[in-house]
Amino acid sequence: MGHNTYMKSFTLWFLLISSLLLSWQIYAVSGENYVDYSKFSKELAQELQQDITKLEELEDEDSFYEKDFDYSSFSARVTDRDKTSNIIKISSENRNIKFFRAGDEVLFNIASMKDREKCEGHVRSVEDKYFVIFVKDLIPCWGKSEYFRRGTVLVVKSFRLAERVREASIYRGILLKRKKSFFKQLNSVNHFVWSYNQQKVKVAAEYDKEIMRIRKKKQRALEELQLNKKDQIVLQKELIQRLDGVDEDLDFYRIEKDELQVDRWHLDQDLGVPVGNRPIKAKPKL
Image (cartoon, rainbow, N blue to C red; front, side, top):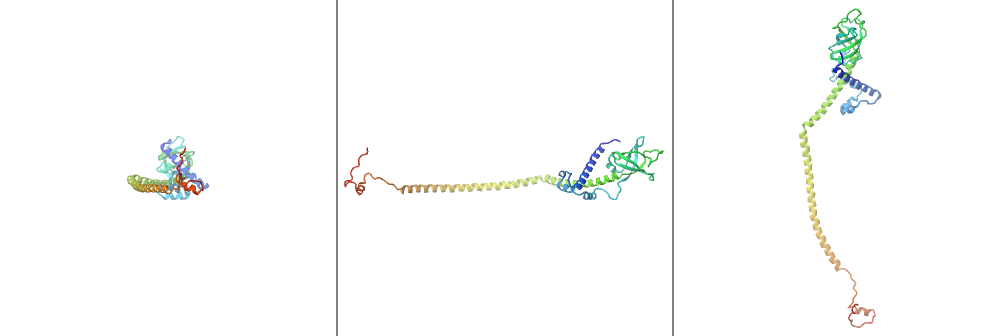
């Protein structure tokens, strides 16, 4: 009758649903985004940021939820009880009882005594195909003197369960959307993994083509540089020859002013200096 591993996982899962729905309600009222949409893909994040009324439309997408069906009512059977008959363990073929949580209110009648009032109980724990409730008083639906037998068939009514089923159907629609998004991403990943060799060859070919283009460009540049070198060598020789010619012309056309020492007798006559008619020998320098 205690909690098992399934109950713990169910509790954690249902807390996740409740927190998610609460976040959507807060977002709808205050206009603030309290959900970390960065954890989802972009497309899924856009879908999750819808109004709750739009999310309800997801119920029709393979959520197995029927709006016209009464999920609050189901039949069950008493399988065990304590001596006081206040704690009752109930089995049911209704698999939606997994959505019960501790503290949920349930109303029930005895199947053979539907004309009597309903008894009120509260869920204590949930197991696979079983749930345990606490009933304060069985008199309204059972009576005082009759022994509450194991195997008694009950007709259970729980509006909270119906609400939880509806919430679960909405969340299942979201999960389906998320699954589709994951499948889409997985398909893209698989396509990349499966076509890796082709992609590798394609990328290598593109880079080989680029390398060949660069090599040709390099070769062409080197050839142009070699031709330019030859032209520069020819130009160098031509410039050297022209420079030599210019140097010769500069030497030829250099203007010089010489002071005559021997053949200057006629110049002295022009100056009126007393000299002889013939030039004389030059005096030796001391």
